[in-house]
Length: 161
Length: 308
Image (cartoon, rainbow over all chains, first blue to last red; front, side, top):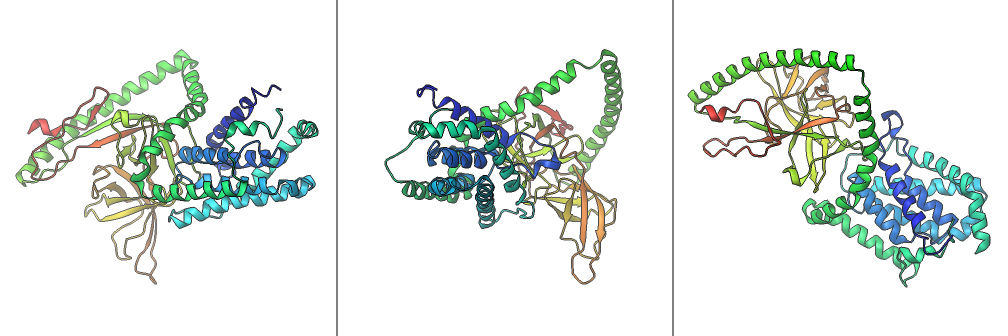
């Protein structure tokens, strides 16, 4: 693929991810909505480190904050943290088999939810914790699906590096 | 797939190491949160960002809107005629009731004049559509397609055909964010619409089918089926609109307050259109009445001010 057009695919994928994050879902499964942006950015950080910089995570976090009416910087800080960890330890993580990697992703997504919950608590917002383990779980499933769908292409890309 | 590791250059990489960049950006985030916590500081930033993400909201809402209009277009002619007939009948009934209400309201106003107290002068309302955009699932919020350009303001009340829906918490250029009365962080001053008019506060629970009335003593005169209307205290919600109906009264002899649960009157999670209300309430002793302006604004209720 031409290098000059390299920003088109990421930009579109980020836009789609933003859309997925606010797409209306039936009430029954709404609580299980994965944190799409976190899943996608973690995926890229582990599979192709430095594809998206921390600055991208920051701006996408602010976009989510604006869309979801959260405190400005809340999702941005949570996204920054998980992307930083994924980026920092990607070499160590990448030798893991997929099953172990999935657990790592779950932990990162749980950390993401926990940071959001923590900030909600600090500013005194009245938010339940009971259902918050569900999005990391569904997010991990989405991540596994992403790996199985795109893994082949990724391996070839890595071989070229 | 493009070559990973290369494309990042276009997405803003500075000369700092990963850790330093993380710490710097995290500090920016914390600073933003601290400023945003005091609502007014970041209003401009919020509004600018909201304009930036406006396309995402429109993009998400579009398929639902298209489906809605398609389903209207594809409805059978006979069904439309039947619906039209039914609406005409309903309108006739509503108008009949409105005539009686008009007479009552003039009478009420005359009596108030005798008592030398003025209250409601009139309400203006504007129809707003709810965008099909999901926000934080833990908070009962939604986005409307009206903003600063329509004169929407923070704290404005929202009603629908059945009663009070919520209020505006944030306004941007083209959109506004509203919070339902059932959000866990909101409360509505209500009075029980039965002979004595007991006043209390209805608090949201986070469940769009339940409201709590936590400040009623065990001896309070309240029972299942009591209708609750807004009392107008606090000045946010107009007085006299239905809020809900009491569905559960649990007396707790060991505590001083009883647990009372009410069910909201309006169809909070099924609405697609709501009314934004301008509460042109007159302060006693103040003779000025705010002018009702704007072509899109339809008067609701009777403008008693003109009769005076």
